[in-house]
Image 1: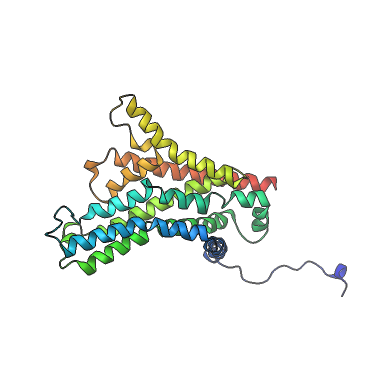
Image 2: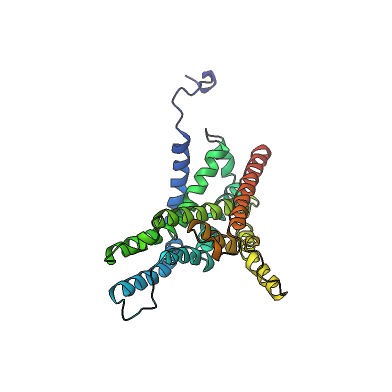
Length: 281
């Protein structure tokens, strides 16, 4: 039958679930990341702090009398996740995996191809967020849980869990909260530009401007500048809420609220940018 004699036929098959569509997109983006040796090298380097912490746990448990200053408590896991942010592994992973996630699609026109299929903007955002957040969890939650398991095997008692029975929950919640925050922010910044380089520079400037601003305030003799003005400092300060030691933080609840506000703004930016990109295309 000639092509001009064919009439339009509706698709009669079943539509896949939102999770299936998002996972399919995430699998495609994730496979591209895993093929890059530089990304795998970055992941490996990001585990060096965990190896150091693991050696600390081993020495403290096997030679407690020789190194009495090495104490193992819940603060070790809070410090570890916080240091993954302060020492930039989280920032670098988010920059590498997320800065080009949306900007590259806007530049190449792939975004239009995605939406020409039965994929909504929400499916698209979730599909782009999954590989970024998975990569961030690989350098925060995964090594933190590994350290926790190492302690369980090396310890001869359960004193740690008696003092902090909710430690596993604290580790998981703090890691997930931190990774979700950086994932949404980097995707929002990525959607604001069609150039991955510009998006990466913008995200780096946004993350690093906070500590510089707080340092400037401290040089102006402003005592205890609020940590929630900085992405990095707010993330570290909010950790006190998850580990139940809010008295030792700067303003942990304010930092938690600032992070929640940042995620809300990021979602609003993503909705606005993707809608305008869809209309303009």
